[in-house]
Length: 185
Image (cartoon, rainbow, N blue to C red; front, side, top):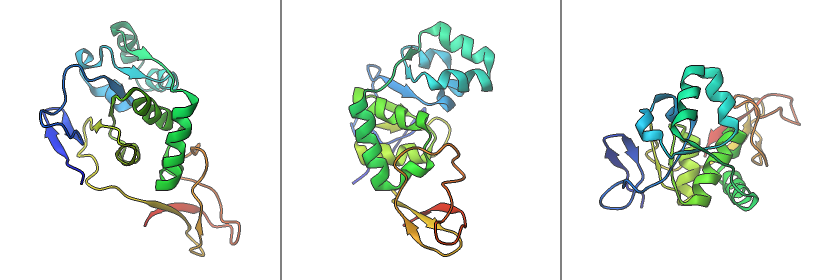
């Protein structure tokens, strides 16, 4: 059973009675890097691909985040592989970017709390037993399984084996040529 708890910083799937603890390490997605107070980000972990994302969205914030000591790291291959396998099982792979996959893998590897408003990342984290908390959203209320379906003929396809470049397009149906979309099972 999943227990969702509200904290003063948003919704979390934290299962400990006392909630999040000061000693917990955080892996943060770009929404947290952009909107969390800088004091909350000191010692947080991000991946290299987020640097350009952050610079594109807010160059001034990127400089501040760099100055406060956010740790830039990458997950190992085993963590990425494990995360990819679960993402294919849940169908979340088609809605994740490389950055998203690496952030979940990093939280899994380091046993950290993942801070994200991305529902797919929360869904995948929940399936992997990774603790998560939201930034500004309500977060997920249940775990979903996704299937790739053709919008034209309705055929089902296997989940992609790697993250997609564009979240709104998974590809085209090999039977009728229509777009493939993720649909909840």
